[in-house]
Image (cartoon, rainbow, N blue to C red):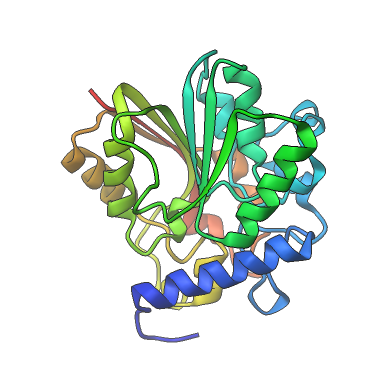
Length: 266
């Protein structure tokens, strides 16, 4: 652990390396030396249930896509409709993309973006398993999305934006790709208070979806500056007990919580 703030490259490289290890391990967990946060060991399914997924949803997607990496269920609250284009920021193994494609149907399109090549490979293999051809997985950073302007109806994301070293850029580029009337529906870890340095500067805790959490005030400020409307950030208190298991011995729910972040592009 360092007392000094990490550079953008240090954070991005650490996250990429750790989640590449998750993709290759097929265990749904971070390497043992960084294991903490929104990622389980062999408990991927139970963790998914603990943050709001149903048994039916777990049964409807490839097993390899269930990695226990989330802190909520954005597809359950996104009110997706047939024919929509949906973008998943930080798609991982494709879990939420496969749930979303069932809701948008064959006339819709789901795009998953991830910066980790091994995750993209995993997601594409999972897509072949389920035989869907209207799900695309694109390699790229969520701060600089490989997606056209004004082309997306709904953006979802699950416990990923907190990992970005430039969260303001994530929300700004999300605004760019949304159509007028498009919606942002995000599940993420949000700071209840300003995090102490031992959490905020520890790359293990950052990769575990805790150290990089922004406050409600910070997120609201970014969204307002970008021009979003109907901004709502709501903590899911029922997930607090699950969050407390992420780093044993630390009551993380005093510092962070799982929250739903919603906004729309006028």
